[in-house]
Amino acid sequence: MYDITGYHEADSLATIFKIIKADPKAKVIAGGTDVLVKARERKQDFIATQLIGITRIPEMQGITMAEDGTLSIGALSTFKQVEKDPLVQQYIPMLGEAVALVGGPQTRHVGTIGGNICNGATSADSAPTLFTYNAILEIHSEAGVKNVPIADFYKGAGWVDLEPGEILVRIKIAKADYEGYLGHYTKFAQRKALDIANLSCATLIKMAPDQTIADLRICFGVAAPTPIRMPQAEAFAKGQAINDATLKTIGKYCLADTNTRNSWRASKEYRDHLVQIIPARNILAALKEDQ
Amino acid sequence: MNQTIEFTLNGETMHYSVDVRQSLLELLRDELALTGTKEGCGVGECGACTVIVDGETVDSCIYLAVWADGKTLTTVEGLAAEDGSLSDVQTAYVQDGAVQCGFCIPGMVLSSTQFLEDNPTPTRPEIKRALSGNMCRCTGYQKIVDAVADVAEKRQENADIAPVKFTRHA
Image 1 (cartoon, each protein chain N blue to C red):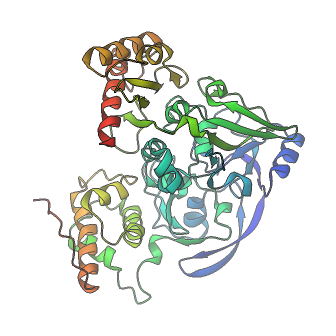
Image 2 (image 1 turned 90 degrees about the vertical axis):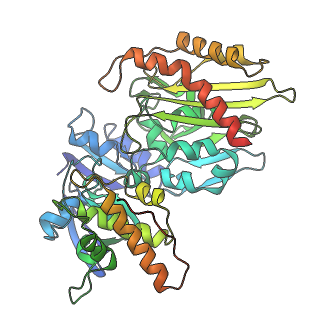
Image 3 (image 1 turned 30 degrees about the horizontal axis):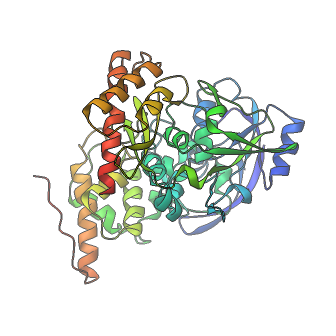
């Protein structure tokens, strides 16, 4: 038995807002693959509270493309739905590849991309990829709708900018942020399944006609308390040709911009080594996959 | 703290008053006495509690019982025919010696069963990925993968499809 005081299956966003207004401690639950694990561990804020089930809310489902090419991913899309979605496969394939690496099949059948982000973990497999696509989070509350860049959403380890009564409804990616880019995501873990990344890295690259780098975007997971973009490496890379020297310099700048830690999964030294070599591997893999 | 839900379990329509605090695993084992579904880790990392919900495998330990409302569930008890004869997947597990202690096997068999519905002509890597949410600490997995490959081959032979041939583990 989970230590909860009640369960409501919400049928609309308005219902969620109403319940949370009456009881700000009520917890929203989607697939439950994080919330129920925390409830079982008796983590504060996850016990002795009522749960609001949100998986049946229509406006949070489905993956669509607007007329201007903006992709819109319902927060309740499961990892499997994202992986198998034709729009994802065609326009933002790196996201499909990243969520295919979450946990095991059972987790991917119920776990949602919205929950992956709102859980706030630096190791979330969808997060580095969404950072490189400059994803915009559409957050609804009783007061209205706000659009938050994903990089502004993460505040610290397990801490995101989401107040009680605010719900992540959709995740949007503008055409300019995916068109012409090639990408590769690496989840560096000890097993191929049912594991959490020691370090993860999403890399998006756009090449200029003269075979120099037109744009490079790198985001690491587990290299800081939140997923983190690499401003120095990205600025340096613009206009560079791809060769050993360029790739090594990108690695050096990544080391300067990350803030790794020791944990039982991996030492700081090991993570610092990975930080320097994985972006280069990702760049070469992304370009190779395109050939 | 109960809610009445309606669901189909192993082909039978059920109306049941469930405690909202209950996991689906607790409902199955403690209330419905379907103890074929096992509790391993309790946090969705081992797959021993796998059941099929609306054509997808889920870990029933981290799945609230109330979520079964309106859904169709299959547990390991629902695989054999009414006369007790085993399904082809279960038979292959026996014939290939894929079972040692047996604790992970109900989950393995359910993952295998649903996977072969979704992908009747799998490759060996696809089988491994499909079973990657189920941990076995005895067998080393090879015989389990062999059993799933055997079922795929036999079904393709029976359906007159040119079967995909698998490389057997020595």
